[in-house]
Image (cartoon, rainbow, N blue to C red; front, side, top):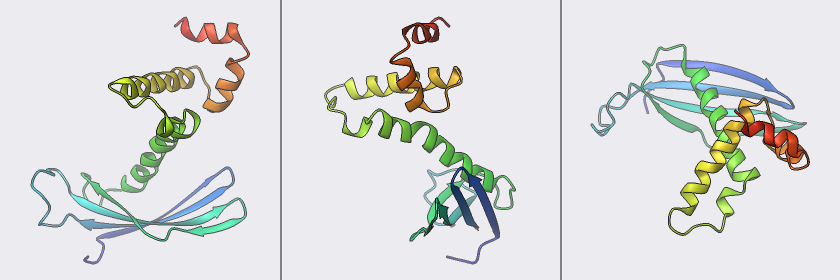
Length: 152
């Protein structure tokens, strides 16, 4: 790959984590499939940081395709927002609701249950619950509070 057009250093501190991202932005390759209209750049991200007291460094970079112009200052925040969606929805569905190990694999059942799980997550978040695990634990023992969620 050619030299990057732009390079960013992005540091994020959350709870017990300190994450440093090195972000390199490249022009989109000319030989990219024409069906991928609007691709203006390719982004390469290296991550390292501290979780708790443990240092870690990603072994492989992460790549993104992006419709932003290569010189856009929105690229680092776009990378963080991508992981925000992953952590606030997909991780919850996979870990809290065990969606990947669900036995409901026949017909449309898995799709319907996935939609219901997304609806529950959105309902709980719209009522101020940041932790879905804590919300489920609390509401499973508080029938009146659970009923108030449904009276939108």
